[in-house]
Image (cartoon, rainbow, N blue to C red):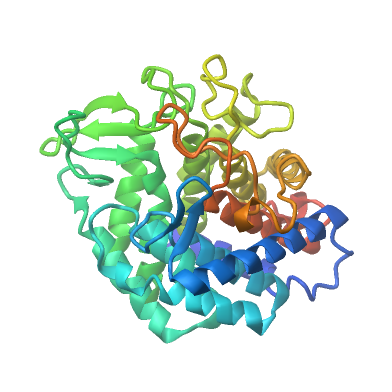
Length: 408
């Protein structure tokens, strides 16, 4: 990374951090009523959910699959939601809940079975360290990143998502979701100075940008590589449509948008910003995007099922909020993300307090074709919805429109 890129990355990180300071104590205009209502519902539902966590020592995944052990890839999201509620309210009761839920994840810092350690550990311990500076969390973040790095291959330049699987003819499978784990590596690099972690994150992002995307900026869920040469063997699916030539799994597209926006913040590399803008433009203008901007399970799949995936909307809205602060076309992205948030905060998608088994968002779909977690609740829909709301409040507290932030 060049000196200029490092300086830009430091400035981006500092700027975003400054926006996060004192959300509830901002001197800006009163937040819109729909945001305060949504966050009030999020708090009431999360308090209900926390009682379940505290009694059973497990963490929520979905209504369909219930409470899960800390080995589940989704386990870190509920602690992360609790940290966001502490950030929003500054109430020490939320901090105490977040700390107790986060502690359930500690043993996962050594779990190298798959790539999901980034999801599990950075949404929990990463959030906790950002808000408290707890040095024990710092150590766990670094140890988790080193565990994740053990799945990296210098031959492919990529982190292997799952183990090889002869039944699927997978030799070195990489899924688009894997981009989200790069934040763990980059933040651990900043904490430790271990440049190997930075190298792995950038290599994985670059190879994914080069090989995972089609010319129209869509991507499949899975790309399988030759483990020796690093050549692409095939596009494949595990989620979204099984038509691998054109499948456009909605949550996967949101993971990509989020990942490259995040990588621009962490590196200052304009290639990542351009890639994120292209993904955003593709999604916002997609002919299959519904009017309320809550996508179907796959942008090519409405003819097979009209199931929506509210988690795809929540992830996309959060990414668009951040992208709006970096891009010269920021207002377009802000307005699109705001539309998604308003939809998710409406009675159609926002749970009534005391219902939905403590989850916040309705009409999320885990895996349509595998008939798993259909049209219900997903803990990561809740996490990214709350994150997106806080990003929305930071932006609107800092400026009337994100145009004022276009130089980030």
